Length: 143
Image (cartoon, rainbow, N blue to C red):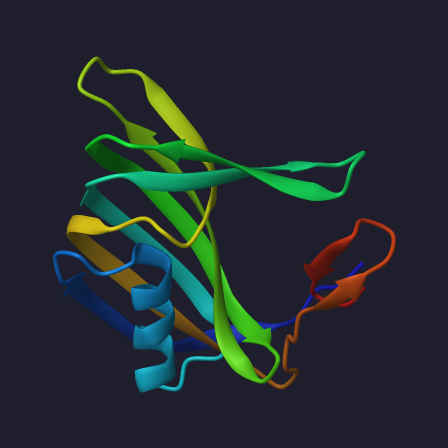
């Protein structure tokens, strides 16, 4: 088990540009403001989406390509370091024009139509760096 005591840092709210890749743009905000630990939330809409599901037996991500406009009903995620750079790990719930929902691990390849985000920095005496976990096959925080 891992539990790191954190204290509040800076908070940012903003809007991503139309056409931005949702995941990469959030990571860019983190790099620009040197945020290495935190949490992110967002809402808005995308022109299409790429969301993933991790097959625990095969230890592989499978991605759905949703080629339609969708509302971002909720995006929640965290920020930590991977390979020395801020990485956003986010899950997203999306809705289509019939009210049907889709969700999963946010992948690259999700262009923004409109997106407002909130980014909360956390300060800690310990750095959280993602590393390969042989037990799950994922890149996780250490135990």
